[in-house]
Length: 358
Image (cartoon, rainbow, N blue to C red; front, side, top):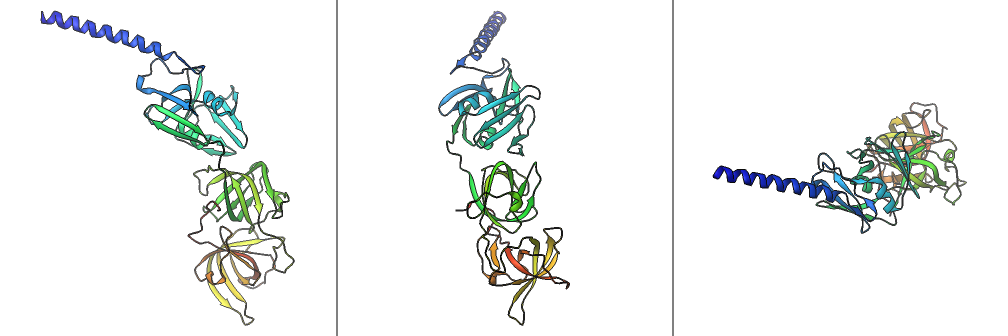
């Protein structure tokens, strides 16, 4: 009798499991706010992700394979955020545009193109049930939204006014490439920040007149307005909307030279000549092809002394072993090392990293 009871119980459990599974499968094919819920029939209840944008529910998403990233339907997301989406069926990519925002999303590629930069988020876009899904981190890192995940609920809030970043720095490198132009500010090598310039980037002089990239030289102090996102490279890169040159041209002898040379390195010696002229001896790396890597620069009252953010410093801070960048004209003596007049000297201080200018 016990065996018969066990068989009946097993049949009842099996029946309930089958009927429960059918009921659950039926709940997957629902409509919310006019959007067809996109969850595969082999998904489990715990994998379904409820998504809302600015308080309105959109199509459900799901957790990726490792369960660490919520995947969200891209078309539903962009519609809710008012972002234009253009689909390219040939390479299965989506181009998104809204104001200054532009990005490219390609299926199965953890490589998100943002204003000529490539970002990786650790999760690639996927096509599921005929829809392209992106990770929740995409909405935060690329679309600049606020994302809050609680259990299986993802809440997305659009930042109406995207806060661009404004910061100052001294130009240490210029890449005039016609396709991907950029300027390097705030340091040399892996230090500082690379400002990627696009067709819509505005470059202005101190008096507000628009100028060309060709009018920029190393050594100029600029104020840049750029996107809040940056690549993880060294130095980081960021899309830039506006660059304003803060240096003004004057009639004095130490005004910005037409051609500027630069040497970055360490001050080996500081001395005062018989004519009471302060000289600093820099040994390091040339920033331009014709510049020496070892040079002595005369510091006058007209020489601009700043840190890498363009903030004024005192001449007393130019001490032996200090890291500096010297900018000067090609008018040098034939001595070894050559001697020239400094137009600007940048002191690389540890507490003057490229940070938002207040």
